[in-house]
Image 1 (cartoon, rainbow, N blue to C red):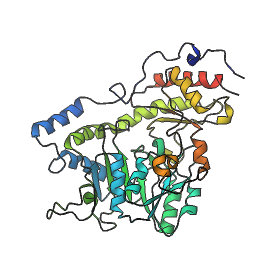
Image 2 (image 1 turned 90 degrees about the vertical axis):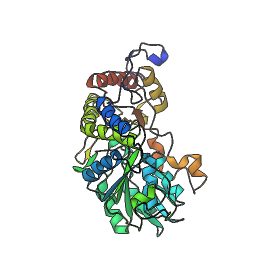
Image 3 (image 1 turned 135 degrees about the vertical axis):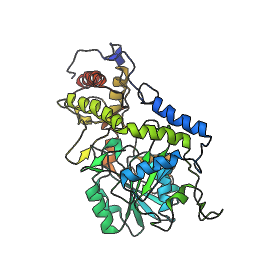
Image 4 (image 1 turned 180 degrees about the vertical axis):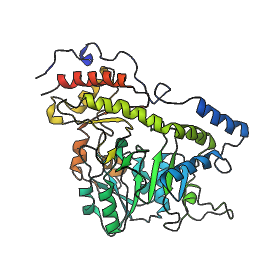
Length: 400
């Protein structure tokens, strides 16, 4: 039974939004301008655009190192490169196990796989979709070496419990902050709890250099390797031309760093923009049945990489794929979930590791329990109000 007579746009009705919303894919949703051009001009006029002897990369690294209180920070070519560099730094051996959440981008586990170690999949919290601390210890074996908590969508994992488990079992913690730059847990930046942290600067992230990222560690040579060598062909440039171990080339150019410096200086303001509109939308949806609007909690400061809206599938007559299609027709780009299935169900993973479809049941359910809406710092309160109208129109129509 429906609760509205409004004809949905997907069925030929009039869309709620008849204009293009801001998108991170171009300048309508990204804060790029004279500041980035100034920094880029300095690099071009200086004639040195590379990692090895450029200056901008070192400046950006120092900004992150100081902000996060780390021993060392290294900018790399992507967030995935940051995570692979972190796994190389831990000197994983074949057969070592690393605990990872069952809902994440494949970049989280590629570094584990490329080091010939084994990702072990942990179930998630049904609402936040972050790693569920209650499911961690049953996966720990004598081969377990590290845990990678992923702070999905800009909301923090339960780091107190994760760190307690890690300390108990003497495991390294690598925080995947690809979607959670400047997110906080109990007032402290995520990425400052574990042994390493990895951040992405990809086009859609809270700050962008197009592609790129940074990997940081509290203690260099934690496992006998320098972090800088783990992204630079294990080449001890400070001494001689040699290669100490197998490592990739994940250099970050000074052109990227120039954009990154300007973006970093705007980052607080850009996050404020994302938060203002997203929290406004959550307030508009607070009384809507069958949804769980996200925002800050007593422990968590949300930075809204995108707007994630958990739903109760049993509250609606159709699944989240139909809901997402209907919302897109109303002018709100929407996906039924962040990933269509738990990451271990992808063929590239499943064919290499012992996988059962029911190994993380909450993750399976979570993929049918979300609506996922792109967001940016230029999404305004007015945009949020129109998006809210579209969401209410669609969800009221399909409500049980």
